[in-house]
Image 1 (cartoon, helix red, strand yellow):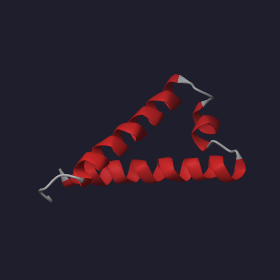
Image 2 (cartoon, rainbow, N blue to C red):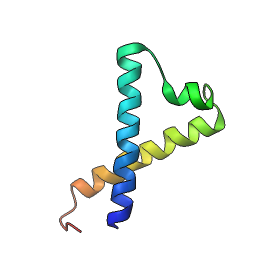
Image 3 (tube, rainbow, N blue to C red):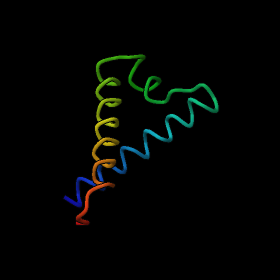
Image 4 (tube, helix red, strand yellow):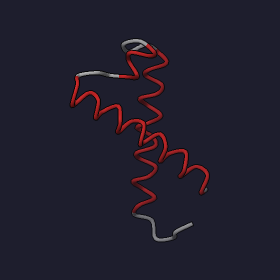
Length: 65
């Protein structure tokens, strides 16, 4: 389970950095690399979103593993 948390955290950091670029410079790195709303960029956005949900639920869980 610790492995999945590390992967989710890495994806969340990548997503956060991408949103920082969008906010500061109007530059979407994911769209630049993989295409504006291409299938691959949509998969990346979805996986980052799922990582955020996963880490949010683990934040409020009672057991720490």
